Image (spheres, rainbow, N blue to C red):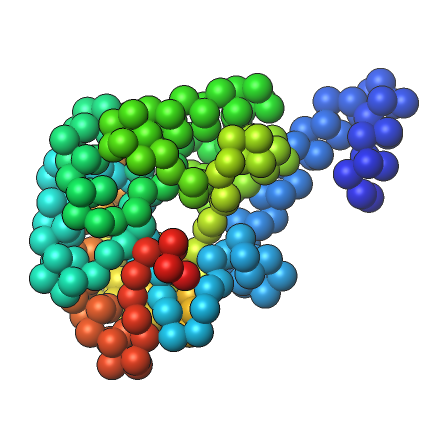
Length: 242
């Protein structure tokens, strides 16, 4: 059933109004299924130009982890995209400024790390607008990219992004570095197994929503991942160059 037919059914049938509207609101959550997203929604997945890999980090800025990642990236002379949580940025505004001062790109990851389907349309737009404006005020650069928590988009989020000048971007590969059982080796292998030419890689520079200390394992895996990408003649950089 299409969205328009579903909406008409919700209007006509009083008993199914709430379930039907809920289904309409969360239908784009299917984009969270990686293989389907990569195949049918390449732009949303972050598929970019050949020879380039977009390196992205979520959940910062974290005063414990992020400075270490910045040092590794600086040593390799690589820029990345950091999707920041506004709550984390307000706690470490100097670090958020340091990210942009180092030449990295910032994107919006939300105000809190909460699933979008829990928010209605107005709350979704208000949350995205508040996070975008706060990050812009802190860093001096208004972000133009958005990545939803858990990679789950909703109809309301797509509409809000269109009104706010934000482009949603998810990922084509990840390291599954948030898991308690992850190791530097498993993060490297998972990331590289899923990564293809022109892809977008998701890692985390913070453990605020991950297993405690997980950023340390990601940090240990990062040089291996960079070296492997460079051995494949892939250039790593931010999404703005993708």
